Length: 349
Image (cartoon, rainbow, N blue to C red; front, side, top):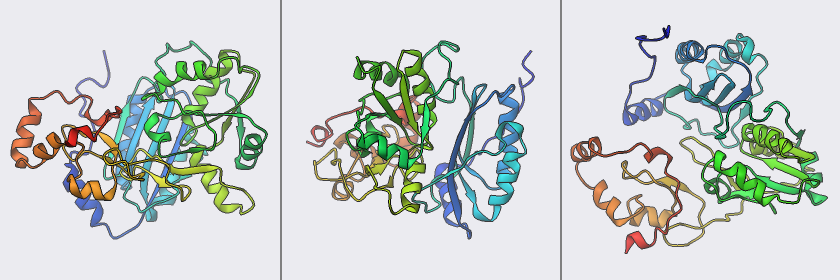
């Protein structure tokens, strides 16, 4: 029998608008950070409730995934509680001396509530457990080593999704057009056909996807697999500290929180999905039933009320009570994961 059966689940029940208002009313600053670790967690459900209780008491917000294979966390911590948070985190043997990747651009508004979920995997690869050794990873490179390898002509692969690399990537990188990590792994094998003996450089936001991707490529016979230590976030920090290092990342780094992006270089390399003008500002459609993630310039945001189509504009103008009533009768399982490419200009005609 499941020992957690019938147990009340600890969670934040505040609605989005109420939670955001509470965040805006805070009289202290917050620090946005992320961390991950592949480590055996024998009872993820119990660990989930323990962390939720500890972190809620410290005012921590964020999105955290736990699984038997480890933890993946993106959070914001009140600055006055930072030392206590680190001490509490490190008190668990699974998370001792956990490396933190602090946000590059941080206004403290990255998250407005705490969500901790137990998953089958902290990064879903679509493969059966044990199909490849996820601990047999590639070489970890710092920013200086990474730049040197790029300058020598190594093959660079972006291990993120198409909507992430669209607004920013390393110069000359292969950018797969997949929507999920599990779709990307086989796509990368095709992109790297006959390059088994090349020097391969992998990168992602904070490093967690590259841990699996590098092990996956080594399993498939690639001999010189390398990954950017700490991902784009740590790379930007190292570039910032060392004026002698060139920044080879162009554009924005997509982040999975309310900011949706942090600027790494001044270049804007993408376009508004509605009018085609230069823009790299991701938004979610204001029609909550749609919630499509897309790039919208400020002019289009004003003209189209933050919506992706004429139909969504009409829907968003309905009274809130009617919108809620309609949503209750609709299937919205995928509305928070809707990243499909569309010609949005057509929906406004």
